[in-house]
Length: 53
Image 1 (spheres, rainbow, N blue to C red):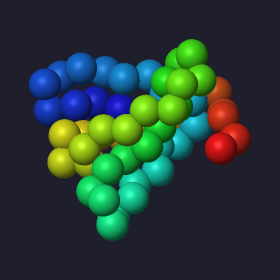
Image 2: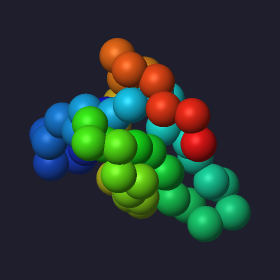
Image 3: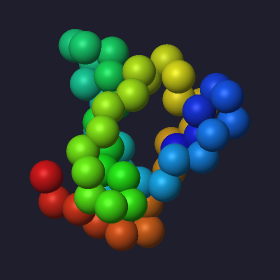
């Protein structure tokens, strides 16, 4: 994922958008579950590895 500030966040699998909360949840490269405001994301790509929620 790429944020508005230009930060590139490596993810495992494809981030999931929760339209009810306006947040996107993803797993970072270490497998930790994280959330970020969907409005802060400029580009989303599927990570190289896959994590089953």
